[in-house]
Image 1 (cartoon, rainbow, N blue to C red):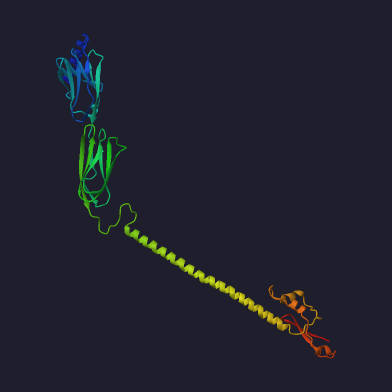
Image 2 (image 1 turned 45 degrees about the horizontal axis):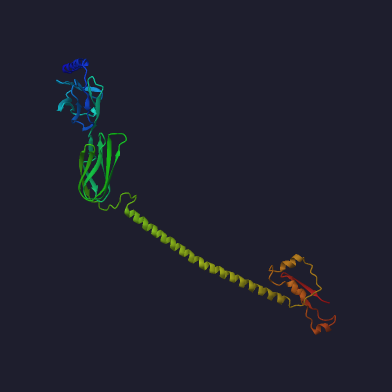
Amino acid sequence: MGSSRTGILATLVVLAGLAASGSSYEIIEGPKNAMVLEGSEARFNCTISPGWRLIMWSLNGTVVLSITPTEPIITSDRFTTASYEEGSNFISEMIIHDVQLSDAGHVRCSLQNSDRDASAFLSVIVMGELFISSGVLTVIEDEPCNVTCRASGWTPLPDISWEIGVPVNHSSYYSVREPDEPQSTVSILALTPQGNGTLTCVATVEALQVHKSVTVNLTVVQPPVGSLDKPGASLPTWAIALLAVSFSLLLILIIVLIIIFCCCRVPGREKKGSSYHSEVRKSATVKTNKETLQTKLKSGNENHGYSSDEPRTTKSASVPPRSSEPSVPEHRSSRQPYQGPDDRQQGPTSRPQVSFIMGSPRKVRNVTLV
């Protein structure tokens, strides 16, 4: 604590002593940008023309190192200096030991009593953790599987690749950032292994070509006996085969039922046609029988002088309601009664003739001709 105060006081004394004197020196070349790993060293150079009295180095706006022509003024052990001569010019070098992520930022070199300065940017790379979810992986032969590698706490995020030391049928990988952790990324390897071996996850920072890796052993086993399930299938193979056979039998049954139905419909049509012809023949037979009956009824003599006292509706009701059959009354009115020669020679004492007129099958009238 006392040494820090002494250094600060010495710097103030030097600055006060140089304030009265003019100078014509200047910065010829300033520091360059640097990118280093966390925990390593960072070096910056500043070239100054002759006649300088005080050089100051600052980090993110804070003076961390001062240099006079006689000796440096060191305020922290993490910041040291080295000097070189290049002709008549002077080169001042600031060294930052055990660089931390908080050191990242602007580095500035300036001179006392000069409006010129030069600055650079310090980038710090942080190599975080890299691990695979399991140290030993056991998978089934020829079945797809995924292996996950996670890089956490990296600045900037690394590029992740895989070194596959096992025989595979197919392999691919991709990386995604974790939304909740901006300094973390995940790489997923998808492969179909066919034998034992190792898998290596490699995280690389391209800027410095630095990398970090982790390796896992992969053990491949045979599928269980009797297991026929395939990844991504909702049903086992035996169930799919059973369903296929069932649907095939159902389809065959439907076809057979359709054939039987069609075969049963054809004889039905023939029977219908046969029934139609039978009805026609039956109708013709009934018609013939009726005509024969009417002929027999007309074989007697017809009395034209008889007037029926039955209602007309009764007479018409006795006639069968067929439009195609001949009307009995029409035949009755058109035919004349047959009279032989003996009938004309007979007088009033001749034998009475009887005629039968049937208006209805149930009513018979006897008429005596005088």
